[in-house]
Image (cartoon, rainbow, N blue to C red; front, side, top):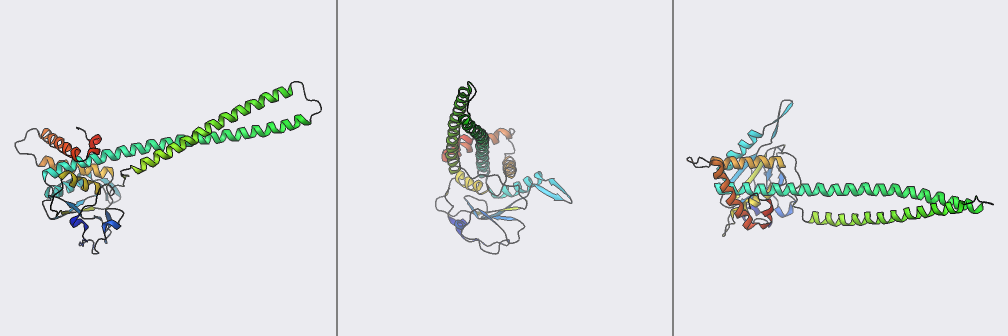
Length: 305
């Protein structure tokens, strides 16, 4: 997706990062370690319609250390994120961010499943080639033995009756086995070439959603209000936001972020709304339609379109 114009392109100096950020084009990722090393700071992400001109959202690690034990502190991590998200995003943005995050997670899951299937094919082909290599060694030994026996048979003064006929039959069987091996070996290497082509296509179309490790330090998400004459759609803005979170956040961290978004949505429900789940479902359904209208590739990853 094209890089966001506007404030995201300008050098930013923060209390945690005294050195201005480099040009985003020169960086391989959206984030760099801060000078303190205590947390990670995202590059400035430009979002239309923020409730503040500038926002710093801290995403807390799910696993925390208490003494000598490591504990799952997911509830606190979600609570920390939800309180901050609710103060920065509008309800429409929260709903669209939930949709965009689900799309990316489903796309990532499909990518991982395809990768595993491709790895299984490579493993099966490797076993097939190993078997063929063993058969080739066995055939080579047979052919060597037959060559020695033919030499001995030619030197023998009076070969046993029928020995030549039996030897010819054995030679014919080995020739057939060798031809069968050649055919199967050729098919195996043709399968190798096809797999290489499949892998090349897979890598070319890869969404680059490799699994990341769980956060070990707080991750600071730096958001800035967009300044452009023609605002982007909410779908485009939230797609940009979620896309920037694919590298630093593991799938588990992304799931926790989705829970935080949904907690914010439910907290914004009208006081007189009795069917909050239906109200939330209708909002997400409408947002999915809007997201699909702008990003047609996302249709297979939407639950209700």
